[in-house]
Image (spheres, one colour):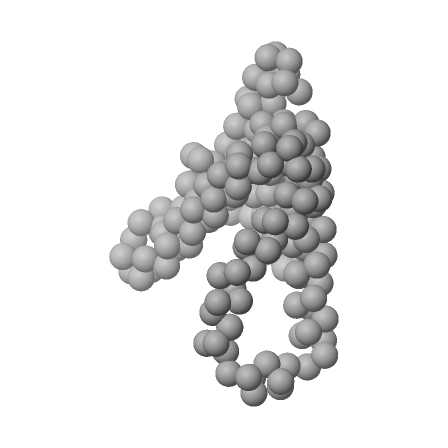
Length: 167
């Protein structure tokens, strides 16, 4: 958490930024907490019903709020979307969501939440590295220090799991 806070930087606390950075940070933390809760709830479901059934149920349950809000999108806007946009949406729904969650649920069912979740901490490193390589962003001192703190946390967690016989 300290590494992520350093990555967010001191501007996250300044009012001049309009609170947007802090709101974004809060949303990332909320998303992380909700995904952790999902994983904790999912493991027993995957063990009882199997990862495929648990994925199907969680995908349908997750789609319900979105479907309930579709009335907010005018039909003519949906009809005007190009085929490429529909292809991208289909990929996000099936490839990223369904296939990704199925693979995640298989990993959690087979190795446990703690062990399967450890590589998720590398998301920050991958995001920063991707920004540098793909978007030409510069690595700031704060990002480097935050990234090192995140990696230190991952190393400590992995070592603790390894010593406890969980890894």
